[in-house]
Image 1 (cartoon, helix red, strand yellow):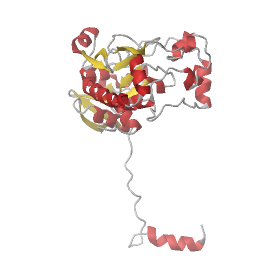
Image 2 (cartoon, helix red, strand yellow; image 1 turned 180 degrees about the vertical axis):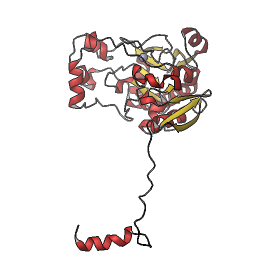
Image 3 (cartoon, helix red, strand yellow; image 1 turned 60 degrees about the horizontal axis):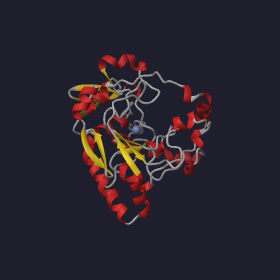
Length: 295
Ligand SMILES: [Zn+2]
C-alpha cells in the first residue's frame, strides 16, 4: 500500500475521537449449527428447542437435550463416549438431475484400498436420537407404529410421518404420467415397494432406516442387466464400481427423483455407494442441500 492510500484509508477506519474503532462483531459459529437447525425445521412437531450449550449446538426433544457431539447427537450421559459411535450422515446431497459423481483422488485412493465386498463394518451408531425422533426403539414398537399406504400404485408399510409426503409424491407423479410416456413406462415397470423391515444395513451392525419405516425401495420387474447396488456390483467383480457410467446403472427418471426430493426424500442413487432402488425420508438433508420446493 502506498503512503497516499494509507492517508486515504485512515479517516474511514478511525472513530471521531481518533481512537481505533472496535473490531466488527462476528457471531461465532458453534459446531452443529446448520444440522441442528435443519432437524428443527424438518421436525417441528418433535424438536421443541435449539440452543448452544457448552460451545456446541443442542436440540430438545421430549424434554431431553441432544448435543451435537461431533455429529453423533448424544444425550448428556453419552457425550464423553462420542468416539464409540459413527456420526450421522448428511451426505453433501446434491439436488437436481443425477450425474455420476466425480470423486477426488483421495476418495478414489480410499475406495481402491478397501475391499468392500469382504468388509464387515462393526462401528455402531447411537440409536437414541432417531429412536426418539420416530418413537420406535424395538421391533415390537415399530410393528405397532407402522401404517400401510400406497406409493406409485404399490402397497407399502411405512412410518406415519411419511403418509402425507407420499400422497404429494403420488399426486405429482400422477400429473407427470399424463403427458410423459417415459415416466408412465417407468411407473409401470415397478413391481413392488418395500418400506418397513426391521433389519441392519447390509454388512454393518447399524439399524437401517427401513427399520424405522422411513426408507422405501422401489423394485422393478427387471433391472435390464444394469447395476443397481454398489455391493452387488463389487461382489460381481466390478473393481471400480464407483465409475460405472449412468448407462450401466438402473436409474430412476430425474423428474421422479425431483418429486421425491421436493417432499424430503433423498435418492440412494446419488450416493457414491449407490443404492438405486432406495429412497429415504431425510428432510433435514434436503434442507441442508437447498430447500424443499413446491410446498
Ligand atoms: Zn432400501
